[in-house]
Amino acid sequence: MNRKNFIKNIAIISAVAGIPGFYAWKVEPFWLEFVYQKMPIKNLPSALEGKMLMQISDIHIGDFFDYQYIIDSFKKAQQLHPDFVVYTGDFVTYDEPRNLDQLAEVIPFFPNGSLGSIGILGNHDYGIDYKEDHVAKNIVDQLASRDIQILRNEAVITNGINFIGIDDFWGTNFHPEKATKNYDSQMANIALCHNPDVCDLDVWNEYKGWILSGHTHGGQCKPPFLRAPILPVENKRYDAGIIDLYDGRTLYINRALGCLRQVRFNVRPEITLFALESA
Image 1 (spheres, helix red, strand yellow):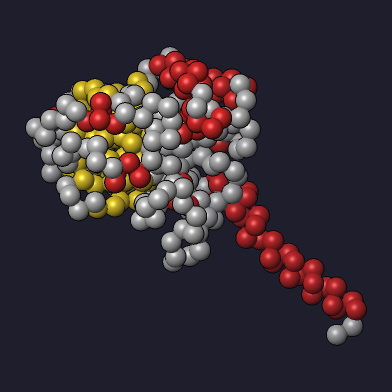
Image 2 (cartoon, helix red, strand yellow; image 1 turned 135 degrees about the horizontal axis):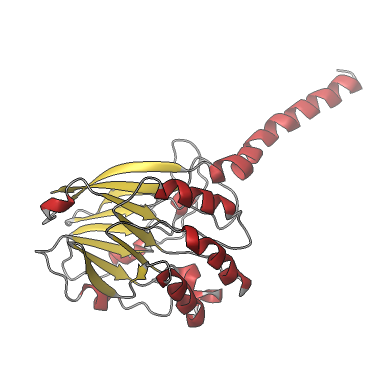
């Protein structure tokens, strides 16, 4: 092989090798998927049969990700006219105070449910080292201006559904027993818990039903047909999608709408749409 052909072949190999990197950086992080699931719930009021519950998780507004994509995604989501919208944490990637100003830019576009909008906080909503309570309060106040109620170890009945909201596992306000202490098995219940590792703690007071989580981003990058190699949880079974906990609880882990860093491979961003039905 002469020098000219050698250089040409090296250039071709480099171009081909760069395609997956470009895809993971510029394509898949913005390739939103609306995932449709059925959600059978015990004691569901008949008036809620067939209603839509939308789950949005891990939005991560901040400096490390193009949040115009978040605004565009929210516009598409609101056009689906959800009945309930639940947010399962990590509204921001907090690094400095201006990240809260960036959240304020996006707040007007947050989707609302016609029957209710509920949420919980994630670890990044507690600021640097997950210990800054003033950051969490600012986020809660901003979301309240959009009629999104953030549950902090508490439960609220909203149009026939009892939403149980557990504050973040790694934050400064983790008291799950307060959220579950008045659990009523005769209600239609849905639990919100950002970090799915909490499912393995003895804090659930015999809760049976759905638990909606986020936090893992589905690993954000994974080889085809294999499990994600990196997950921010102790229980590596908790990656994404529906997971039967074999005790009357069903866990759903959303793959996240945003990114901590702008890279995804084989784990598309997600907004989940649950069709409510009687169990």
